[in-house]
Image (tube, rainbow, N blue to C red):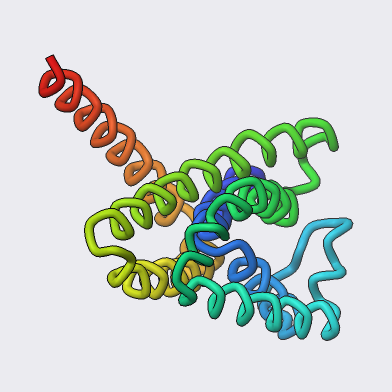
Amino acid sequence: METIIGLCIGIGLSAACGFRVFVPLLVMSIGAVTGLFEPSKGFHWLALPSVCIALSVATLCEIAAYYIPWVDNLLDTVATPAAMIAGTLTTMAVSSGEMSQFASWAAAIIVGGGTAGAVQMSTVAARGVSTATTGGLANPVVSTTEWVSAAVLSVLAIALPVVVAIAVIICIFLAVRWIRKRKQENVVHTL
């Protein structure tokens, strides 16, 4: 059961990494420093105050950079692989000792990296649509929605892991379905 809860927390935190790379890591670090969150073996560095400070600075810089026109679109290209790595790390940081090291890393890469990548690609698409339709004027709204979503999702992933995991899986399923429908509509319109 501990493994399933760990994976549920990992799914929620990984989805949050898809919105903002550093926010979930900061939430985990704050939780570890205050004793509200216990990272798995090998990730106790999250409980160091210096790491918490460094993640706070990184988070503020990341959030601020997304409010600079054109830099936000540039950051999306860098953030996609970074989100997948962060998703893998956050999932690994909550994995239980019940699984072997290989199984833990495999699950973290597939579940964590995959979830973060799927969410990040949807944010790239949203920002692209915003830039194309409003010339970037609505991008600050998109940026605010993303970092607030990352913060809320990170806290809820730790507090209500199963509920968040189910919600994330449903949202990813619906997003994939919506994208497929749009592609089919575009194919019909081009014929």
